[in-house]
Image (tube, rainbow, N blue to C red; front, side, top):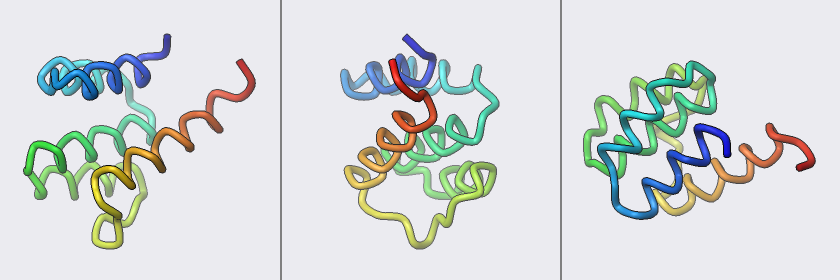
Length: 83
């Protein structure tokens, strides 16, 4: 299981701290986006905007938390290619 998939497992289980600690071990743009999404979930929009910038994503035109997670998962699937 990829690191980012593990982050999503922790996030879905309500283990925000574990998800946050793990996402920091990946330096990819996808990880930066997920890091930003975690900060949105936490309510820390200033940090979320910073990580969106690192991911080259538009923070102010983002969707809801659920929409962002759906978009992220679709992008993750595309990035991983066929299993």
